[in-house]
Length: 381
Image 1 (cartoon, rainbow, N blue to C red):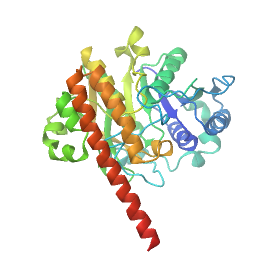
Image 2 (cartoon, rainbow, N blue to C red):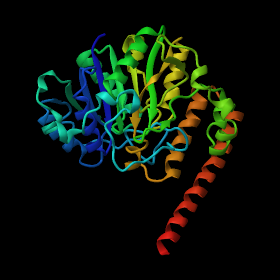
Image 3 (tube, one colour):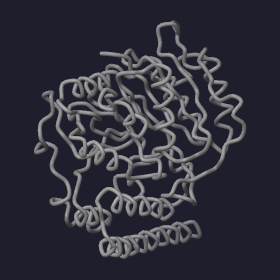
Image 4 (cartoon, rainbow, N blue to C red):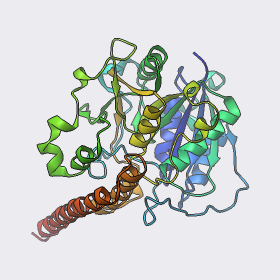
């Protein structure tokens, strides 16, 4: 297999991003790591500059000056740069206080004992020459998840022309075993262009790992917390009933979460590799948009069911967007764009979507208010 580059997108979460980079410097499946700072508003750039300098890496954009805080069309109020894989309202996962360096049962034998601190200065270990290279990039503006990752991909292609590109949230842990199985499934699956593995929590609990690409009305039902539970049998195909991929443990899914996945760059020739992400979407729905683009070209998404990675669900985005309702608002903007642009929804369907999503938003606001009230009452007592 050819060269593999890993993109780690950071926004106001330098410690977590640097920790993952240090962890992945132990990898034998990755050749280059690119830390992309998505125009952070805190001191992330300075922290990452020190980290990469100590690692002997390359720093790009040192003289780029201050960043522009430009949000995309799907989220003008909040400006997160990296994201959690939203499995429901704004990512309904666990929010652990600390991370773990295991990828679960599929790869415990390969996990590092700890993150950056255990590997010495900048996570270099004893033999830095044999480890993946590391490069730091700063984007010109905070354009959201798709914008930042696309900037990272463009730079990785310019510098290294990799055969595989890994997109990784800072708040994941993944082993070489998992990466190897995902790349192998991509290689062996005809028309496979993107692939991922099953998702587990830091405690080992299986999390949401894939979507079906649903038609408009069924996708709309999947937006509501209550509807999703009632109509679940019609909204998601069990993993063992998905079409088989090119390896024994792989299946063909509709879309996979954006927290970790691998792109086979030969599936993106010419202009396609500069338009992998739709940069008009600031946050959420990028996975389905990518899957729809691939489907249109006769390509598919592979899910490796016998490997897994750890995702500390929403750990990064929670530092950028406060509150469930605020995240829900961004999610709904992205959904409406997805329905109009990629599912071809006309005026009547768009009206129905707006009304339905307004009801869902009201439900979320009510729930959030009830939780805050309960917390305040409990503290007074």
